[in-house]
Length: 389
Image 1 (spheres, helix red, strand yellow):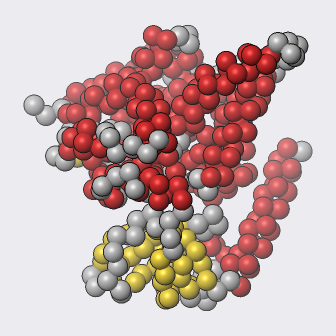
Image 2 (image 1 turned 135 degrees about the horizontal axis):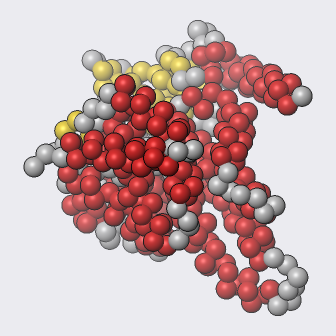
């Protein structure tokens, strides 16, 4: 019965997507944001994205840096099939026109002298793209995940909202003492976060994180084990139904892998402040293998990334406040100094065979404690072998 329901839901979603595809074919002008731009031969390649589609096009004009800018253009769609529509496709275009920034983007842009830094914070707060040079430096320093909106940031937002709203709620709670403050605040925070998702145009990484947060909240409400593997499997299933083709993207894979390792950690360690600190180092160790199979940039300063992870919540809140009052560029000099540490790097390559062995042991680790310690030992050996003195 469940399989039949899932199949019917999937068919229904494909029909909805096909209606969107027909609407896409009828439209003449497309508005989209530039998420990547590079020069190839005598023309520019642009990767664009809006709430419905992601696609590539080319321009032979002498374009300025358009990263994160919204443009309007006319697409030639005659060769775009329905399957192409479901994946990032290529289509030629003409009549490219730059659209003005919205008020929030303009406000952030005005606080930084360099476009690179404004893009960095637009990525941090709005889920936008980072230029290639900065992205490589972040990767070499092992902190790319900190500037890509994800469950990590929703966690910071949830925690900050909880501590800000708790005193206010406590004051009014005396008028309705029969209410459960944690349930009420949880629902309120989820509502605020939903508006944040709407404001950031529903980036897939944040939607996945929000979905899991909502599922965990529901599980906790019914006093069930939030660290049950069934929760993770259920969330993956829901994500597949909602996003379907997005689940095959690398970002989704790594986010699921990351959550699995968090579940694995709390299977053998109790939740406490000390273990929360230990979790940062553990995640760096186990995710090192995965991240360096797909992204090989490394330098010795990457070993500091677990510490950066621990102080990042403070940085996130401080920068949010500084940008709110119009002084977001105050710490740009410090950030520039730190990013420059990632200028020199080399590649660490994890082989596919090793990744397979590591993955099998990781699955075994859910049942076997020796496998849990084994994956940590293997990852540490890889890390130590990567260091150049």
